[in-house]
Length: 190
Ligand SMILES: CC(C)(COP(=O)(O)OP(=O)(O)OC[C@H]1O[C@@H](n2cnc3c(N)ncnc32)[C@H](O)[C@@H]1OP(=O)(O)O)[C@@H](O)C(=O)NCCC(=O)NCCS
Image (cartoon, rainbow, N blue to C red; front, top):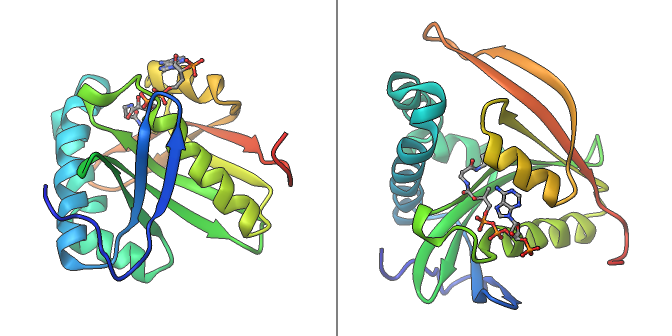
C-alpha cells in the first residue's frame, strides 16, 4: 500500500507518545476506496471470523465494505479516513456526523493486527474527538458486537459506556447482536 496520501488535501497529523506521527488521510479517490476495501477484508476476516463466523463476515464485507458500498456511504455523508503511519496504512476509521442529534457515529475503527496496542487506536480516537469539538458535536456513539470482548474493554478504557443491547436484521438471514456504546465529549480538553 504505497502512495496512499492524497496530497491535494492536507491530512490531519497526530503526534502522540509511543505512536510517532499518525496521519489521518481523508478517503475520496477510487484508489483510496480500494485501499479501504483491502484493509477491511484483511482485518475483518482476522478479527471477526472467530466472533460471527466466516460466512457472515463475507456477507457483511460484500454488503458494507465493498468498494461500491464504501463509495455509496461516502456519497451519503460517511467520512472514511485511512490511518497512515510511517507511510503505510495502519488501519482505517469511518464516522457519520449527525448535526440534528449533535452526535457523531463512530462507524468503524480498525487497526491492523500486528500494530495493535501501540497507541494508534487511541490517537485515532483523539482525532475523532477533535473533529467532534470542531463541529460542535457533544457525543460519540457506536455499535459493537456483544462478543467482541477485547474491543468492548478497549472502548470502556477509552471512556465509552454501554447504553443498551441492539439486535438488527441485516438481511441474508443474518442478525447483528450489538451493544450501543456512547462517550460524551466535553467542549474543552480537560
Ligand atoms: C480496538 C482497536 C481499534 C484499538 O486500537 P489499538 O491501537 O489496539 O489501541 P491502543 O494501542 O491505542 O490502546 C491504547 C490504550 O488502551 C489499552 N488497551 C489496549 N487494548 C485494550 C483492551 N483490549 N482492553 C483494555 N485496554 C486496552 C492500552 O493498554 C493503552 O492504554 P494506556 O494508554 O494506558 O497504555 C484495535 O485493537 C482493533 O482494531 N481491534 C480489532 C477490530 C475491532 O474490533 N474494532 C472495533 C470494531 S467495533
